[in-house]
Length: 180
Figure 1: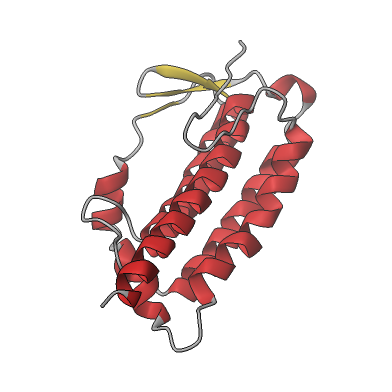
Figure 2 (figure 1 turned 30 degrees about the vertical axis):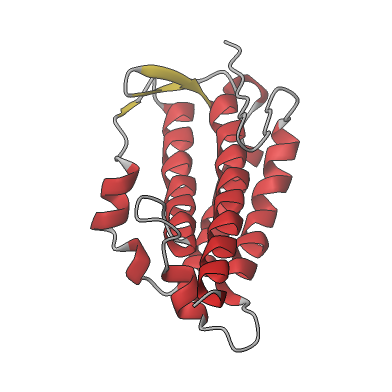
């Protein structure tokens, strides 16, 4: 089964992303997410900046980080199950419902950054332990087959793409704050 993912919005193309690339990328996400959640411009109210939605329908930086934290956890669960079960099936939560139910925008940014780093490291270790014949094992997500390799590449895409979302959102929020 060969699945590839190209994202026109962020430019991510996983065709040449190897398992080693996945592990390396995942291990960097903790640091890469910590910066936008904890470092702010002089005089800036960081708590407000990370919690403000740039548009009503676009998540805040904190909400995106919570989503990625949870995605890494969900993917770890699915990959582990795929390696020991025959075609486990998941419906998966709706992201907006998970954000509302989990009160993403009310969480502590430092704690979220910590947990995201822990989840990314755990997922990296899980992928590091996949045997050569395990990358083609599958789980079903809403009826669609997803291989372990596809899930690995998807995890890197999620992490990269949502960093782009966070950067864009923070720029928009900061620009709106300056013009007030």
